[in-house]
Image 1: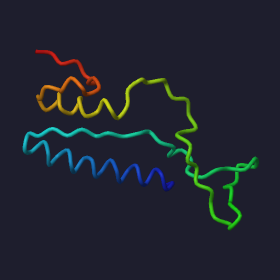
Image 2 (image 1 turned 90 degrees about the vertical axis):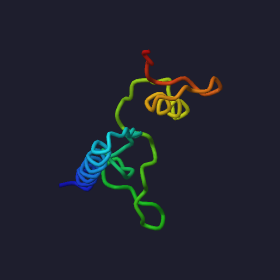
Image 3 (image 1 turned 120 degrees about the horizontal axis):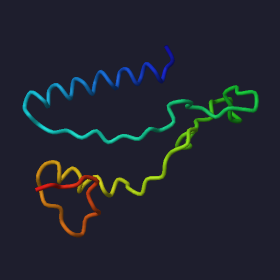
Image 4 (image 1 turned 180 degrees about the vertical axis):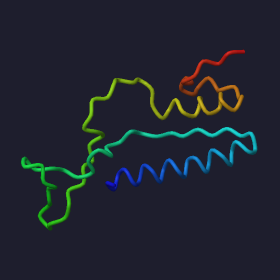
Amino acid sequence: MSDSVYKWCCLAWLLQIIHDAIEQVKGIYVVIADHGNAEDMVKRDKARKAALDKEGKLQILASHTLKPVPMEVHGLANVAATVMNIHGYVVPSEYEPTLIEVVE
């Protein structure tokens, strides 16, 4: 099993533990995540070997992802209003808009 698959499995297991605990108390939780670049965590040379820096250390891949991503106009600024709406609060007008439709 690859390192990233192992880490994703651990994350799924931990999120399930959190979900189960919050469900027992009839709470709400929101997972905010980014798809990141789990498909490859290091830069590669033309031969697809892990690239090393001048000191011989792996060069970490800091780009967002290697896969195409559909354009989204929303961001973290919208999360606060969304979480407030989910919990039943009215969002102050100076906040960025919520990402959900509030139905009365």
